[in-house]
Image (cartoon, rainbow, N blue to C red; front, side, top):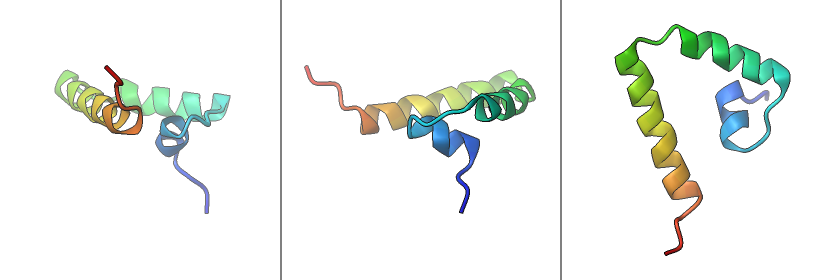
Length: 53
């Protein structure tokens, strides 16, 4: 099964094709949707890469 471009990005495996697909999709988001996506990505990173302080 092929993973989505976003899944590939979040797992650290991104190709030029993935980047192009994501760029097209993200460019269609409203500012509110973009902020929500930003929150989702920030939350994922916080869980996937714990900040060791």
